[in-house]
Structure formats: structure tokens, C-alpha cells
Image (cartoon, rainbow, N blue to C red; front, side):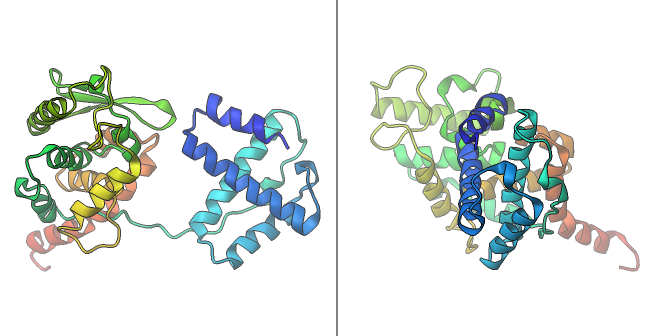
Length: 295
């Protein structure tokens, strides 16, 4: 079914991350299994729109969210475009497929007052892990970087002279993000204690390491962020992405240009950034009440 060729196409030409490629291939695997079990079809050339609609109905019957179903449909659209491009097919059955309407979920964020409590220096001890964890939280909130970007950050990517960091985002796109004097001081503090505890770490090392000196990993970062946000919030969602959402929302609330925020977040199009404008409605209501004579 040309799955291996498609996998190479996603990795090399589309430059998708390994995680994204894995998700696409998982969706295709589920789809092909369904076609084989329900219709004994093992070739994409035999699949018609009615078969695809049947699969979509099955997914919905399994209580999968519209967002999840739409992602799988998007995978199929991508794969069929690939097959047409490779001239493996003459027609695209996805042309007759429409996606279920998904509810727009507003980003979860931490209020500014709670962020102040979260970042208070008394919450962190002055040992290696305390200094590291504080810098992790500060970087997420003050730069809006993604989990994978922080995980793979290297010392050479942090330019304290130019006051900026270079991150490798989705599809291997590099971007520069300015940092504050506060971050600069924390980085220097972290470097000093890390290099004192682990003097034998190699050059061009990854910036964040575990208490054993190994490269930090995503689950550990997630646990750190969840624990720290839990100090100030009872919300169920307490992830690095919540701090990224907080960064964008607070920037907008304080008058930042949405196009600048788009560049800082590394979004490929403005529509991905515009969702944060919905979170500013509470501020608009307050301004309205304060400014309108008849409010």
C-alpha cells in the first residue's frame, strides 16, 4: 500500500517530526485494518467514498471526538494526495468526504496573578534541581517555547550576549526568541551549579539534564511543570503547553501585536495564533464597564 514510501515522504520532504509521522502511520494502520476486516479490501485503489464514510461512522460510534476524527480524515487526505502525486491512483475518493464540525476549544492558561505566585523564588530551593526547575518554568512562560524545543535546547543555542535563544521548531524551522535579563541571570546561575555538580559533561551538551547528568526527557519536564502549576492552580490541565498558552494570552492582553506573537510561537499561519484573541474577551468586558458611560 506504499506506506513505507509515504513515511519517507513525510520525514524527508514534508520534514514532519518523528512524533507526527508516527501519528499519521497509526491512523493509516487503523484505517487499513478496518477496510480489511469489514470489506476484505487490502488495496487503496479499491476503496470508495462509501467505505470511508463507513469508517468515519464507526469512529463516531466509538465515542471518538470530532477533533480526533478530523485528524484521521486529514491523514487520509494527505495520503491520497500522495498517491495521486505518485500516480498510483486516478481519482480521489476523499473529494466526496466532509469532516464533522469540531468544537473550538479555547486554550487553558494561568492567570497573571497566579503566574506571579508560581514564579516566586521562595517556591524553589537553591540546589541543582531547584535552580533547574525554576529556569524551566521561567523559559516556558517568558518565551512560549514548546516542550520538545526546551528538551532539545543546547548551550550553544543560548546566546547571553545577544540576549536570545535559537530553537528548532516544527518541520525543523529555526527561530530566534529574545530573552530578558531575568532569564539571563537564571541561566548563568543554572550553568554555574550544573557545571559544578557535573564537571565532566561534554561540550555542545544539552542544556537541561537530570540529577544523574543525563539529558532531560519530556515526561520528566511534564512532571516538573505539572507539580509547579499545581502549587497555584487546581485545574486538571497543568502542562508545558498551558504555560505557552499563558505566554501568548498575557502578551495579547498587554497590547502585543498578534503577528509578533505568531513569530515568537513559531506558528506557520495566523489562524493558529488568533485563537488566543478569544481569551481576551474578559479584559474587553472590564474595559467596556470602566469606559462606557451607560455600561
